[in-house]
Image (cartoon, rainbow, N blue to C red):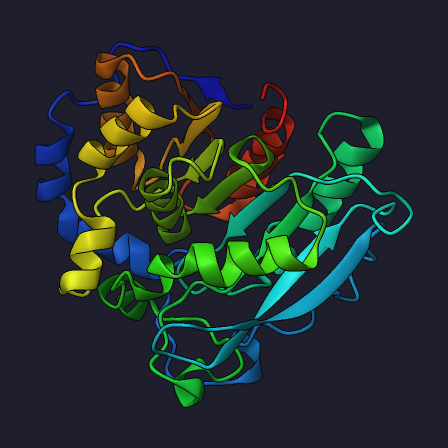
Length: 318
């Protein structure tokens, strides 16, 4: 069961979280490399490619579509996006809110399908009325050099994912992903109708995409976010990932989110940094919620459960 964290620092969490992180950084890196987000890949194989959007183990009760995303920045010429639509999409004339759902390291556009039970979660919550029906968009937001490097959307090794974060693909997200989806589907194309959520590095991308585009996203869900945002040095990285706190200050000053949700696990290596961000936002008086789950930096009891929580909170109070 998840726990809502108090506003003060609890006794079981060291107050000097930054020093603790520095002290145990080698251990954290080892854990990262051996977690579901990190095991190094020796060579390419089918097991490391996204695979089909519909898999044998579960038949979705709503509509699965695949679209091709032309890329406007250096890298592959196009990518695949998986879109999950409510069953009545083509029978109704209504516009639907959109949840952009980002994967983490070693991930791709089908990670939430293969490991995160996104279809099962949406089907259950929509059928029971516990969540607002929406369009769920799952893009591939890894950095790739070109079409050969993209290799059909392969996952990126831990070190690739971390140190190749250059901010280039993220800087084109509003045009290449959001703009494309708005042009193809009946979306509610405003901040009240847009949510973005992601895990680990995808959680980091989520926070920065929302902070860099405060007018675009009304709901933000960061699950075990890679708060440090260490990546490939360069102008694009600095512009996109520079100074998260300053960007959040501007975000709350210009367009305060309708809902901002931080998540971490009991044994999550990103818990100290996530907790520090929670404390900072409390000091600034920025409305948000911080939840902790009995998990590590992983799917089990973690990101899958956090997705269920996010979906029940977004689009409820525009």
